[in-house]
Amino acid sequence: QKEVEQNSGPLSVPEGAIASLNCTYSDRGSQSFFWYRQYSGKSPELIMSIYSNGDKEDGRFTAQLNKASQYVSLLIRDSQPSDSATYLCAVNRDSNYQLIWGAGTKLIIKP
Amino acid sequence: EAQVTQNPRYLITVTGKKLTVTCSQNMNHEYMSWYRQDPGLGLRQIYYSMNVEVTDKGDVPEGYKVSRKEKRNFPLILESPSPNQTSLYFCASSLRAGGYTEAFFGQGTRLTVV
Image (cartoon, rainbow over all chains, first blue to last red; front, side, top):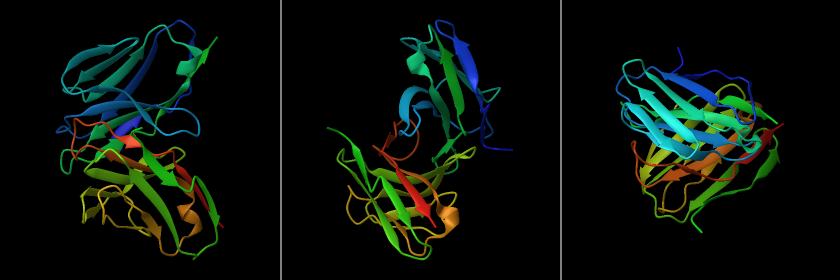
C-alpha cells in the first residue's frame, strides 16, 4: 500500500463545474496536509494547506480533511481552463516529519 | 525576489561521469531537500537537510550524495551516474522541518544519463 494514494486520472471536468480531487493516506499520525498544483514541465506550487478536520476555503478552492477516514480532498469551484494541471497531495510522515507525496491527479478542464 | 534556484535546467551526460546539480535559496530557510519525479511515482525524496552540516537520507538515496556547508546551498552530487537516474529533479526549501510549513521548489533539472 502506498503511503499517499491519488487517482492518476485524467479527470475531465467541464468549464464552470466543480472539480473534486481525492487523496488517502496511511499514516494515522500525520498532522499536515497539502495540495500543490503542477503545470506540465513546471515545479509544484502550494494551493492549500489544512491541519484540522473539516473544511478550509480559499477563494474557489476548498480543502476537506477527515482524519478518521484518512482522507483529504480538494474542491475547485467554477473550474477554469487555467486550472488544468496535475494536483499533488502531500502529507507529513509522523515518524520523521518528511513530506510524502502522492503521484498526482491530472485535471483537464474542458471549455 | 524569494526563490530557489537550480542549475542546470537540462543536462545530458554519459554513464559514470560525475556531475553536480546546484541548489540555492535566498529565504534563509533551515530545511532543504532533493526530490526526483518519475511518471506514475510522484515526488520521491532523495536527501534532506535540517540545517547546516545536518543531512539525512530520504527514501531513495542510493547513488546520490549531498552536502550542506552553507545555509543557502544544497548541491546534489551523482558520483557515477547510471541510466536509472534519468529523471526530473527538484530542490525544495522551507522555513523549518516538520509540518505546518510551505515547501518552495526550484525550477527543476531534467537529467538524462546515456
